[in-house]
Length: 153
Image (cartoon, rainbow, N blue to C red; front, side):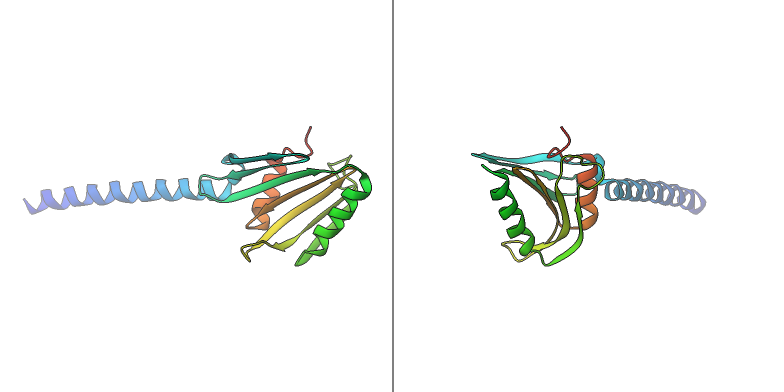
């Protein structure tokens, strides 16, 4: 009888171990491939200003905002003001590859109103200023590559 209990325990442990491995792999895939999991959760719209907050299955939020100005000078002034508020600027480029209509792009860190560091991509395109912000640089770049609607159309 003890041999039977031993086999049952072994089967139970094997089944539990397999479930842990499958769950671990699933969590790793969701963490490593966040581009597959973004979904819109908040929309905002106003005169000349609209945005969307996106969320992954792991509740990581990435936001994007587009603001349209009356003139290119006003847009440039707003862009420069935003960049002046950056904690760090990691990359600055004029006419970046992949965005033929973008005049200038900055990748940097910003401190938000809740005093949290956010990684952000800020772009100037004539009369528009586009900004993506995320809790990590990785999520900002992945979102920008796969899901950003600001300059894809």
